[in-house]
Length: 137
Image 1 (cartoon, one colour):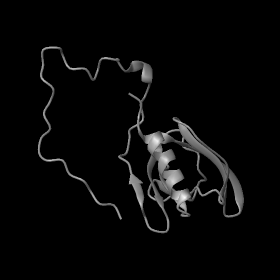
Image 2 (image 1 turned 135 degrees about the horizontal axis):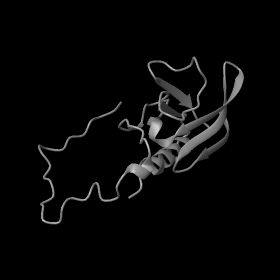
Image 3 (image 1 turned 120 degrees about the vertical axis):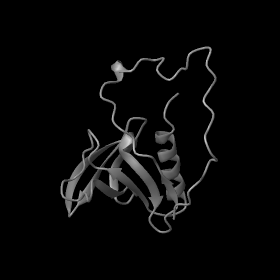
């Protein structure tokens, strides 16, 4: 099954813009293939204003978000793999979603398709403890 992250990022982006708010993305700037301006990241993360007024040629697909933006008045082309996006939220009220950090796959061909399938005679694992939700403000 495909990752839900690209679909959620696109949906939240549209929802934030439709509500006249400013969408910001929190990105792991040390993730492989991330292309963001050097010197603007802090502690391996960067917050990007991706509002329609702040970027040009915004493109979101299942692999990455790409656009042109200005940093310190200098234009840059940014490329953000979907797995490097740690969150998307509205600047005005903080509403949005935070994602778990994903580790990059070394080589997708090395993954066996049946790695996640348990042996046929085994029972599925039972969840331990109660599920919990965290309020993000």
